[in-house]
Amino acid sequence: MKFHLSKFTTKKQPNSSDQSQEDLSTQQPFALVKYFSFTSLGVFLIASLVLVLSFSGNARRTMLERSEIYSRMFAESLNRQVFYLFVLPTFVRYGRIALSDPMQFKGLDLIVSDIIRGMKIKSVTIFDSRENIISYSTKAGLVGKKNIGGIEYKKALHGENSSVLISTGSMFSLLPGAEHVSCTLKTYVPFRQDRGGGGSGDIMGVVEVEQDLSEDMTALFSLQFKIILLSLVIMGILFTVLIALVIRADKIMEARAQERRELERQLHESKRLASLGKMIASVSHEIKNPLGIVRSTAEILGKRIGKVAPGNEHLAGIIVEETSRLDRIVREFLDFARPKEPTLTPSSLNGLIKRLVVFMESDLQSKNIQPVLELDANLPEVLMDGEQIYQVLLNTVFNAVHAMGDKGGGTLTIRTTPLGIGGASVAITDTGCGMSEEKQAQIFTPFYTDKNRGTGLGLAITKNIVSKHNGRITVQSQEGEGTTFTVCLGDGIKT
Image 1 (cartoon, rainbow, N blue to C red):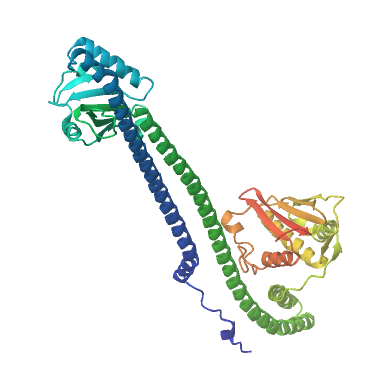
Image 2 (cartoon, rainbow, N blue to C red):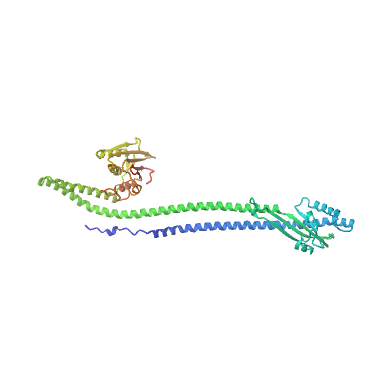
């Protein structure tokens, strides 16, 4: 007999570097999406801040322009009223203007105080036209001081209006413990003679109008702070949502990549097992027929040896026993290589279990194993292939008996339980030596065994049969305490 094993060789498996490159190429588009999302978020945040600062700057300039216009209009009104209510009457009465005279100063102060009453004017100061000295001010402490007007005073003497802004603080001044906002606008306007014709009269001095804009500036900073804070909150919410989406997408991508890798591993394993199954089926088929001839011949020789050489019949018996063991191994190989499709009919798990216990009664007694049956009387019948499920139960119980045989006996508990609609489960628990976690992960792998004699196909065949019934088989074990195999069958049971 010649076997060409080359046709059963599997294809080269992809190495880890190829797998890593494939995963990288799969995740690269998503990485670009993440990069684009975070970049867009950053650009949007910067653009929002720029717009907020631009809006605040425009609002500040508009406020200052309107405040300056207001100061100039007030100064012109003040100029006219002071000229008609104070300058002309005083000049007629005294022949000259002398604010050093307490009576004249008091009269001017009453007029100015009456004019600015109810207006957002902090102070009014009048400079002499002949020298840079303060002739009058609503701030008494400034009267008589020299050289305070500066360049704005000189511009006003030449008929040019000008303003100067003095401010301290910023948007951060709204924080507790920070410097308070202070904003003052000083407007310098020429103090002219009013000739009544709308023209410009001679310059008699310079009027300084001081406005306190601290409240307006604080309100502007508050608005700016609220807009920026709102933008940051919105950006924070968007960023949090984006982070959550990215994390969720990462998990989904990783789960799908892991699932794909697992499917690829299962596919490669299936191909390997398929090729191995073909080889096993071919070899087993070629061995089975000669093995049957050897057994038949050994049986015939045993009968003849009994006549020719009495007492040596056991030699032929050894051949028959070993050929029977080899026949069982070949059958296991064939069951694994060519699994039969189940013929599903309504059957009772309780009936199969009772049949199995009767069959193994002698083995259980010889090994001092006590069977305990906890069979649910209301267990529904399940669509299954009775003979195949019987083989599943037989393989599982055989393993349990073997595990307890090493301990010199024990208890074998078989429990049935209804599952959902039309489903049922059977749990087989032994008090044997148990298994480690590493062994539990390998027991359903073909050809894995820790026995001195065995193919390691029993539980692999068991799992294949259960899978073909759309069921599942699970194992729970503790070293030194025992093992429980649970088989679930019926509608709604996922493998």
